[in-house]
Image (tube, rainbow, N blue to C red; front, side, top):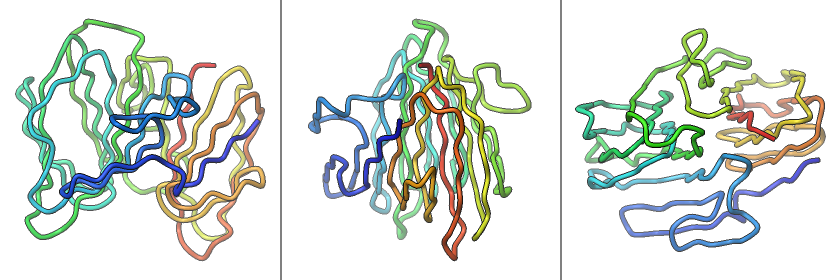
Length: 232
Protein backbone atom coordinates (compact mmCIF):
# COMPACT_ATOMS: atom_id res chain seq x y z
CA UNK A 1 0.00 0.00 0.00
CA UNK A 2 1.34 3.36 -1.04
CA UNK A 3 0.33 6.90 -0.06
CA UNK A 4 1.94 9.77 -1.95
CA UNK A 5 2.04 13.28 -0.49
CA UNK A 6 3.06 16.05 -2.84
CA UNK A 7 5.40 18.79 -1.67
CA UNK A 8 2.82 21.53 -2.19
CA UNK A 9 0.37 19.79 0.18
CA UNK A 10 2.65 20.10 3.22
CA UNK A 11 2.04 22.53 6.05
CA UNK A 12 4.10 25.71 6.26
CA UNK A 13 5.31 28.45 8.55
CA UNK A 14 7.17 31.63 7.68
CA UNK A 15 8.81 33.86 10.30
CA UNK A 16 10.79 36.05 7.95
CA UNK A 17 14.16 34.60 8.88
CA UNK A 18 12.78 31.03 8.61
CA UNK A 19 10.62 29.46 5.89
CA UNK A 20 9.65 25.94 6.95
CA UNK A 21 7.62 23.24 5.19
CA UNK A 22 6.14 20.55 7.46
CA UNK A 23 5.53 16.99 6.25
CA UNK A 24 3.78 16.21 9.55
CA UNK A 25 1.91 18.34 12.11
CA UNK A 26 4.31 20.72 13.83
CA UNK A 27 4.01 23.98 15.74
CA UNK A 28 0.96 25.92 14.58
CA UNK A 29 0.33 23.47 11.71
CA UNK A 30 -2.03 20.70 12.76
CA UNK A 31 -3.53 18.04 10.52
CA UNK A 32 -5.03 14.98 12.20
CA UNK A 33 -4.29 12.93 9.04
CA UNK A 34 -0.59 13.77 9.19
CA UNK A 35 0.61 13.36 12.78
CA UNK A 36 3.59 11.20 11.86
CA UNK A 37 4.21 7.74 10.43
CA UNK A 38 5.20 4.86 12.71
CA UNK A 39 7.93 6.40 14.92
CA UNK A 40 8.78 9.10 12.36
CA UNK A 41 7.35 12.28 13.87
CA UNK A 42 8.83 15.28 12.04
CA UNK A 43 10.31 16.13 8.65
CA UNK A 44 10.74 19.90 8.42
CA UNK A 45 12.25 21.35 5.24
CA UNK A 46 13.85 24.56 6.57
CA UNK A 47 15.27 27.58 4.76
CA UNK A 48 17.18 29.96 7.06
CA UNK A 49 18.20 33.51 6.14
CA UNK A 50 21.90 34.52 6.21
CA UNK A 51 23.24 34.95 9.74
CA UNK A 52 19.93 33.86 11.32
CA UNK A 53 18.99 30.73 13.20
CA UNK A 54 17.46 28.94 16.16
CA UNK A 55 18.61 30.39 19.48
CA UNK A 56 19.29 28.09 22.43
CA UNK A 57 16.31 25.83 23.16
CA UNK A 58 15.70 22.44 24.72
CA UNK A 59 14.65 18.92 23.71
CA UNK A 60 14.21 15.66 25.54
CA UNK A 61 13.47 12.04 24.62
CA UNK A 62 13.74 12.51 20.86
CA UNK A 63 16.20 11.37 18.18
CA UNK A 64 16.89 14.47 16.07
CA UNK A 65 18.52 14.18 12.64
CA UNK A 66 19.76 17.13 10.58
CA UNK A 67 20.79 16.87 6.92
CA UNK A 68 22.10 19.97 5.17
CA UNK A 69 21.19 20.41 1.50
CA UNK A 70 22.79 23.86 1.04
CA UNK A 71 25.11 25.89 3.25
CA UNK A 72 26.49 25.21 6.73
CA UNK A 73 24.84 24.85 10.15
CA UNK A 74 26.78 26.21 13.12
CA UNK A 75 25.80 23.99 16.06
CA UNK A 76 26.41 24.43 19.79
CA UNK A 77 24.94 22.35 22.61
CA UNK A 78 24.98 21.79 26.37
CA UNK A 79 27.06 18.62 25.92
CA UNK A 80 29.99 20.84 24.90
CA UNK A 81 29.77 20.20 21.16
CA UNK A 82 30.62 23.15 18.93
CA UNK A 83 30.42 21.89 15.36
CA UNK A 84 29.96 22.99 11.75
CA UNK A 85 27.61 20.81 9.71
CA UNK A 86 28.20 21.33 5.96
CA UNK A 87 26.15 20.27 2.95
CA UNK A 88 25.77 16.52 2.59
CA UNK A 89 26.64 15.71 6.20
CA UNK A 90 24.37 13.96 8.70
CA UNK A 91 23.97 14.86 12.37
CA UNK A 92 22.15 12.73 14.96
CA UNK A 93 21.47 14.19 18.39
CA UNK A 94 19.90 11.94 21.02
CA UNK A 95 18.13 14.33 23.39
CA UNK A 96 17.75 11.75 26.18
CA UNK A 97 16.90 13.26 29.56
CA UNK A 98 17.44 16.76 28.17
CA UNK A 99 19.75 18.85 26.00
CA UNK A 100 19.99 22.53 25.06
CA UNK A 101 21.30 23.55 21.66
CA UNK A 102 21.38 26.32 19.06
CA UNK A 103 21.63 26.17 15.25
CA UNK A 104 22.61 29.08 13.01
CA UNK A 105 23.25 29.73 9.35
CA UNK A 106 27.02 29.93 9.17
CA UNK A 107 26.94 32.35 6.21
CA UNK A 108 26.21 36.08 6.28
CA UNK A 109 25.38 36.07 2.55
CA UNK A 110 23.85 32.71 1.54
CA UNK A 111 20.70 30.82 2.50
CA UNK A 112 20.88 27.66 4.58
CA UNK A 113 18.56 24.78 3.67
CA UNK A 114 18.33 21.59 5.69
CA UNK A 115 16.02 18.80 6.75
CA UNK A 116 15.15 18.53 10.43
CA UNK A 117 13.91 15.02 11.22
CA UNK A 118 12.57 13.69 14.52
CA UNK A 119 12.16 10.02 15.37
CA UNK A 120 10.60 8.92 18.66
CA UNK A 121 13.04 6.79 20.72
CA UNK A 122 12.50 3.46 22.44
CA UNK A 123 14.74 4.48 25.36
CA UNK A 124 13.80 7.38 27.62
CA UNK A 125 15.59 9.54 30.16
CA UNK A 126 19.07 8.42 29.19
CA UNK A 127 22.33 10.22 28.57
CA UNK A 128 22.17 12.72 25.66
CA UNK A 129 24.45 11.98 22.73
CA UNK A 130 25.87 13.59 19.60
CA UNK A 131 27.04 12.01 16.32
CA UNK A 132 28.04 13.55 12.99
CA UNK A 133 29.42 12.06 9.77
CA UNK A 134 29.71 12.55 6.02
CA UNK A 135 28.82 9.34 4.19
CA UNK A 136 29.85 10.59 0.76
CA UNK A 137 27.88 10.65 -2.46
CA UNK A 138 28.26 7.13 -3.82
CA UNK A 139 25.65 6.04 -6.35
CA UNK A 140 23.31 3.39 -4.92
CA UNK A 141 22.03 2.73 -1.41
CA UNK A 142 24.18 3.89 1.52
CA UNK A 143 23.19 3.00 5.12
CA UNK A 144 23.34 6.12 7.32
CA UNK A 145 21.63 5.30 10.63
CA UNK A 146 20.96 1.91 12.27
CA UNK A 147 19.94 0.72 15.76
CA UNK A 148 23.38 -0.88 16.31
CA UNK A 149 25.68 1.63 14.61
CA UNK A 150 27.06 -1.24 12.54
CA UNK A 151 29.55 -0.70 9.71
CA UNK A 152 30.26 2.89 10.68
CA UNK A 153 26.65 4.07 10.67
CA UNK A 154 25.24 6.46 13.26
CA UNK A 155 23.45 4.68 16.11
CA UNK A 156 19.81 5.53 16.91
CA UNK A 157 17.78 4.64 20.00
CA UNK A 158 14.94 3.06 18.04
CA UNK A 159 14.27 0.01 15.87
CA UNK A 160 14.62 2.19 12.78
CA UNK A 161 17.12 2.76 10.00
CA UNK A 162 17.85 5.52 7.49
CA UNK A 163 19.55 5.08 4.11
CA UNK A 164 20.60 7.51 1.40
CA UNK A 165 19.70 6.55 -2.17
CA UNK A 166 21.46 8.19 -5.12
CA UNK A 167 20.61 7.14 -8.67
CA UNK A 168 22.13 8.41 -11.89
CA UNK A 169 19.97 9.08 -14.96
CA UNK A 170 18.34 5.90 -16.36
CA UNK A 171 19.55 3.83 -13.39
CA UNK A 172 17.26 1.30 -11.68
CA UNK A 173 17.37 -0.56 -8.38
CA UNK A 174 15.15 -3.18 -6.72
CA UNK A 175 14.89 -3.19 -2.92
CA UNK A 176 13.41 -6.10 -0.96
CA UNK A 177 11.13 -5.10 1.92
CA UNK A 178 9.79 -6.73 5.08
CA UNK A 179 6.02 -6.49 4.69
CA UNK A 180 5.56 -6.37 8.48
CA UNK A 181 7.43 -3.05 8.64
CA UNK A 182 6.68 0.46 7.40
CA UNK A 183 8.83 2.57 5.08
CA UNK A 184 8.92 6.24 4.22
CA UNK A 185 10.73 7.88 1.31
CA UNK A 186 11.50 11.59 1.20
CA UNK A 187 12.63 12.86 -2.19
CA UNK A 188 15.48 15.32 -1.55
CA UNK A 189 16.29 16.23 -5.14
CA UNK A 190 15.43 15.09 -8.65
CA UNK A 191 12.74 12.65 -9.68
CA UNK A 192 12.15 8.95 -9.07
CA UNK A 193 9.54 6.44 -10.17
CA UNK A 194 8.76 4.00 -7.33
CA UNK A 195 6.38 1.17 -8.18
CA UNK A 196 4.74 3.52 -10.72
CA UNK A 197 4.44 6.40 -8.24
CA UNK A 198 6.22 9.51 -9.48
CA UNK A 199 8.18 11.44 -6.84
CA UNK A 200 9.54 14.92 -7.40
CA UNK A 201 11.65 17.10 -5.08
CA UNK A 202 10.22 17.25 -1.51
CA UNK A 203 7.47 14.69 -2.19
CA UNK A 204 6.97 11.90 0.36
CA UNK A 205 5.79 8.31 0.01
CA UNK A 206 4.36 6.12 2.79
CA UNK A 207 4.77 2.37 2.21
CA UNK A 208 3.01 -0.43 4.09
CA UNK A 209 2.57 -4.19 3.54
CA UNK A 210 4.81 -4.31 0.46
CA UNK A 211 7.46 -6.92 -0.39
CA UNK A 212 9.71 -4.94 -2.75
CA UNK A 213 10.35 -1.60 -4.42
CA UNK A 214 11.27 -1.04 -8.05
CA UNK A 215 12.94 2.36 -8.22
CA UNK A 216 13.98 4.10 -11.42
CA UNK A 217 15.50 7.46 -12.25
CA UNK A 218 13.91 8.20 -15.62
CA UNK A 219 15.08 11.83 -15.65
CA UNK A 220 18.20 13.47 -17.08
CA UNK A 221 19.57 14.45 -13.64
CA UNK A 222 20.89 12.64 -10.59
CA UNK A 223 18.27 11.89 -7.92
CA UNK A 224 18.70 11.78 -4.14
CA UNK A 225 16.19 10.30 -1.66
CA UNK A 226 16.13 9.32 2.01
CA UNK A 227 14.59 5.95 2.86
CA UNK A 228 13.32 5.26 6.40
CA UNK A 229 12.81 1.68 7.62
CA UNK A 230 10.38 1.87 10.57
CA UNK A 231 8.55 -0.40 13.02
CA UNK A 232 5.27 -1.83 11.70
